[in-house]
Image (tube, rainbow, N blue to C red; front, side):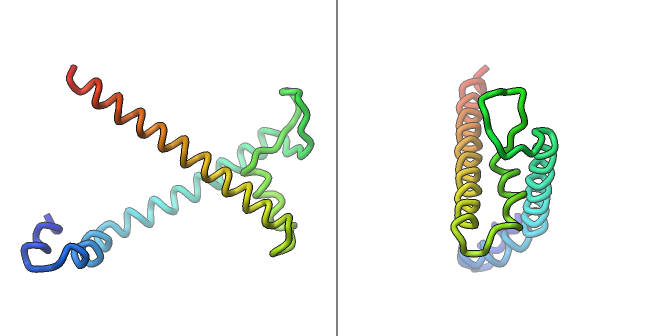
Length: 121
């Protein structure tokens, strides 16, 4: 492997990480970033169209609504940079990011636990 070869030739672990591992993984990292951004934008717009883009929220499930992602996408171009509306939109994006991170982390923990539990079968 390239990592072991680099270490065998006298490179430090930090040099191996920065000059071998990251450089060889950079195409995959770039592809993952682009695919992730594309999925995020695509899913935001589909949800925006499917829910009717209604900013008024009532308790009727059969009325239109607006998700956090759609709200950020629609209102960001209209907000004044540095204003309170702009900052609240970034807060909504941060809440959405943290919720997604927590849900993905929980899913990964459950997946690892189930894999360990059922690997003995």
